[in-house]
Length: 153
Image 1: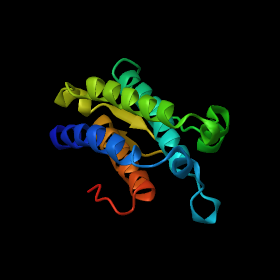
Image 2: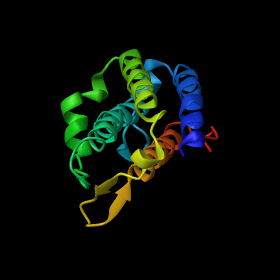
Image 3: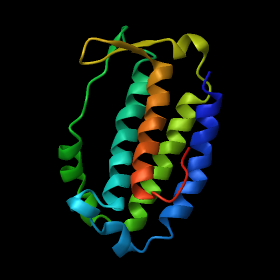
């Protein structure tokens, strides 16, 4: 089941806004060393991840099995969404809202639903449970980039 994943996502919904709000808009928008995405852009990328994964979490429940796990071009999404110049608080609000939706979508999934299959581009199959857990792992990876002094477990 997803009990620990859900609990962890609930905790992040409280902790991330607190950490993000300690940044000034200028700090959030400043590119990281090496010209890497800023914290604002990383949070925007996590919004894109949430948008795409929420769709997957829902579609796998009613589409023919296995659901093709289509990938999205993160750089194209970054450009189209214009996160580099987006309002600091708008992107945080979007991230919160999307992850609240994800919590609603995954919190009551049955064991049968968690076993539903998705086909990756490399030909391997994954379960819905794996995808939800991977979503959280991906989020924590980027949160560690944004806030290296925090322990995101």
